[in-house]
Length: 61
Image 1 (cartoon, helix red, strand yellow):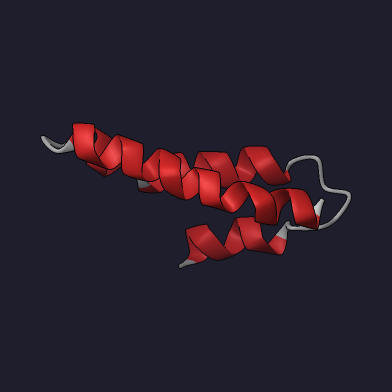
Image 2 (cartoon, one colour):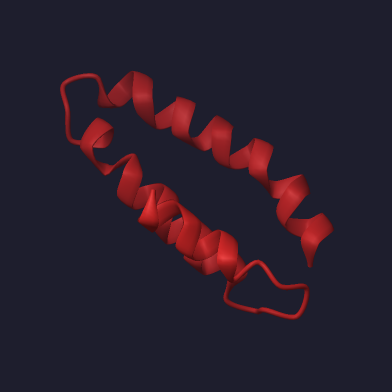
C-alpha cells in the first residue's frame, strides 16, 4: 500500500508530476500481469482501468 499511497500523496492541483507518477505506479503494479501468460487479457484491462482514471486526474489538475 506504500507504493499506492505515495502517488496519492502527491495529488496536488499544481503538481505536474501527478500523471507520470500515477502512470509509472500503475504500470509497475500491472507489470506482473503483462509478463504473465495472460498478458493479452490483462493489458487491455489495464488500459481500460487507466482510461477510467483519466477523468479523475484531469479533474484534480
